[in-house]
Length: 324
Image (cartoon, rainbow, N blue to C red; front, side, top):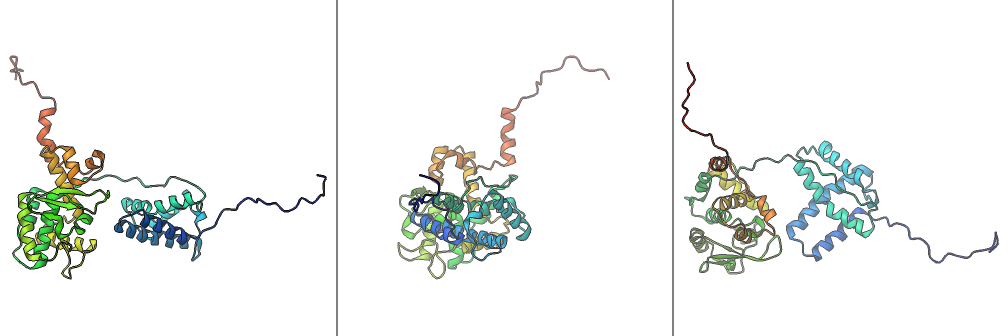
């Protein structure tokens, strides 16, 4: 072909990179997560944190409908600064939580081709702290039967007994139904779990008696929630947390974490030499590594065994004493 000859129209042009609104990306991700069966609480968490990230994108770009292609490592560092300085969030664990809950959306956007750069998220370093579990004395106070006999008091008492005796997760507890409880075979069927794998949780004779007494007060049908609100609806997580905080504080216990019952149960089980394999089946952990994170050895427990493993002074009689 000579210079100046007409070449015609090119049939196969290089496709340009697609510019997609971040809101569009999130809704596509959310729909995909729903199809995959992500837990309702997980989906709610994604939407909650997406609101803050979208607010940041609008602040950063000055646009009401920012697009995805600007998202990269440097932008995520700016997001950390935004959370620290504008939102005044000083806790690194909280900031990392914000990052962790937008990272699946961003990774999804990269796979779809909406975000051009793949990158590692700039998580902040966190200093681990001791997690003080409930002491035996505190557990004894919490398990004492309430003087009031109304539905709410008996329900909350039964909830505390269940948390302390089974290490069940808060979400699992909220999804239990009446027919989940088998008092004859002393077990609870946990069908809604974090791992999506149902399991049976054994219950002690004491918890069995507590649940039997509670069910007489609760009444209701087999398909109804085991621990409902006074309107016979499922308890929201925030409501459960509020009730347990009130219950603990009224008994003079400052600790009021739902998850701390799980830490306490696992720690006490390990100290009682319960097989890790059996314990893992009870708690629903997928691996021993995950289970290990919940063991919180108290200083008194460590001191109690140190003399058995540490070197000892040779206390042989000295025949030659120093002169005064």
